[in-house]
Every structure is written in C-alpha cells, then in structure tokens.
Length: 162
Image (cartoon, rainbow, N blue to C red; front, side, top):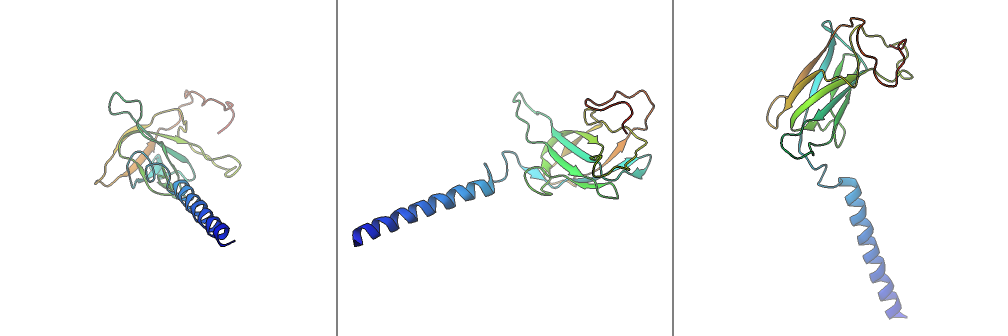
C-alpha cells in the first residue's frame, strides 16, 4: 500500500506543479505582459479649451518597419476632468513605445445618457499622431475639432445621435 501512496503523492505533486505553471502563464500572459514594451501614458481631452469628460481615447500603434505587427492598441477612459491614463496589457500600464494614431469616441450612452460635446467625436477619425517614448514624459493634450455640421457620421450611428 505504501508504494501506491508514494506514487499517488508523486502524481499529485506533478499535477499541482502543472496547475501552478498553467495558472502563472494565465496571470502573466505571453511575454510577461505583452510582446511590446509600454511606457506610462496620460493626457487630457479638450474641446474649445475645456475638458471633455468620460470619452474613450484610443492609442493605436503604427508599424515602424515592414512588419505588420506594431503592438496592441491602448485604451483610456477620461475622468470628469477629461484626464485619462492609457491601459494596454494591464490597468494604467501605458501605451506601446513608438508612434501612435490617436482617436476619441463618445462614452457609452447608457452610462452617460446626458453627454454632449460641441466637438467631433469619431472613433474612425485620426486626430493626431504622437510618439510614446521609453524615457520621455508621455503626457498629451488631445484637442478636438469644433463641429461644423459637415462631419461624416461614424459607422453604426444615426444622424440624430450625439
């Protein structure tokens, strides 16, 4: 009986080790947080010099070489003062180092039904390109353009939404 118990104990230890290894892979992700290094990235969204609260900010990496792989898009949600912190692989970890196109979208209408903005909010429109650096201060003011009434309507939205 002792041999069976010893073998069972060894199997349990091996299974436990395998479970621990699998769990650590899920917790850390591939490449220890991502395939591309990130740097802390913050900013503020402005419309006519005033903060725009609750909008969603997208930092989409641009390819720097012939490789189509540029990194994962980072996303930030502006607070009540229009300030945001970008998250890419984890909460508030920043954006992938390199050049990015920046886009801004209106907040979810269910979460913020009274949201209004006099500037253009279109997640398909590149507002600016920025360079996120490893050692630099990656703080960006994203200045929205005032609506003219001639803006294209974002896909999936009706003309009367705003």
